[in-house]
Length: 339
View 1 (cartoon, helix red, strand yellow):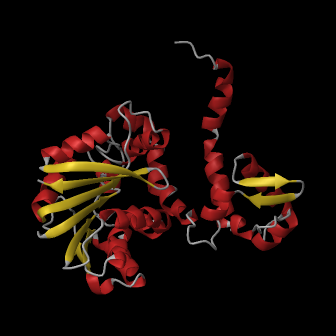
View 2 (cartoon, rainbow, N blue to C red):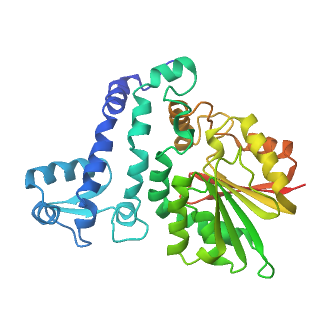
């Protein structure tokens, strides 16, 4: 098949080859608190350089780059935040997500891509042990510390969609809880919800801190360990699996889902919050591209299709599976009932 846009190939090549510069520019801007320093009325290079305590030349070049890249708007000598930059990159807003670079640009994930060709050759990560799913891996501390702002919106929506009865105790298990925001948000919405969070001990200290900060620590407890290996008990009305199953292949997912099914009460539910790709595995593009990171950092991780999720759940004795897209559009909520 002939590429009708072959004349654009050098531009595509250069964009891919130099994309590390986009990451570096964004990180530099966040480190300098550049987005926070730009006022709603617009700011000049001098204004920004004084607030960031940086050189005028450096700020001018960085702001121009960020303008070309779509993070800023330039009118004459003034720079303005785009609506998205104002919402997500200004530290004065609770929706600020700049802290996620601690996870996304961590030495572990970026280091994994240095060995991508070898990972492609062998079909799995070449990082030590099991890559990022190694017991007590510190990367999940970074994840727990940085991801709350982005997860708060979908957590609030899920709490509304689940519609718990407000009478009688509701027992919720949050597996591989990380930051724990999904279970914690349920507890904030429903005063009869009690949450049990399971994760590595080094991560659970952060999860517990979040429960304390959000005022639900009296209805929050923890179980340290690996969901695949440790006993997490029975009698749960809901089990949460957020940002987790994509780290494993289908057989491993089914093994865990069968264990989850056994832990639920009759008519109990499992809610999966995860990335989903279409059957072609190249769309949606953002989710499809994530598979490369899983190849580089895990032994068998994969972004699954909705059909694969439905089959996994059916094989694990779940039924009545339904799904909803979650903001900001990367995740699907998949809800299924115990047979």
